[in-house]
Image (tube, rainbow, N blue to C red; front, side):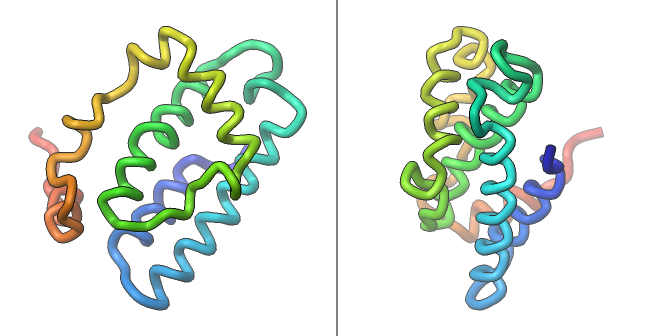
Length: 129
């Protein structure tokens, strides 16, 4: 299973770079998502026939956070056409109550919906200790 941490690191590169560097990061992220999709090939969930912890964690990242990030940055690389297996998996997951309960509402997960600059500032804020 491909490391979720690596996907987060590459997503950060996409968020904080521009031009050619961002394009390269987006290509890298596309390859990482393809690896993730290969893990789902031929089975309904990562662990097989039953939903597991990994499904919930990855769903939270891909379905909610990553989609909002794409919108904030004005990119469209995570699409049903590029990743049909992941999107089929997502369609199953969003019908499960525990996924909906864990979902962060879009309006609170992105404080600055139309501003890439503000979005980048938000990621640099350190958590309270």
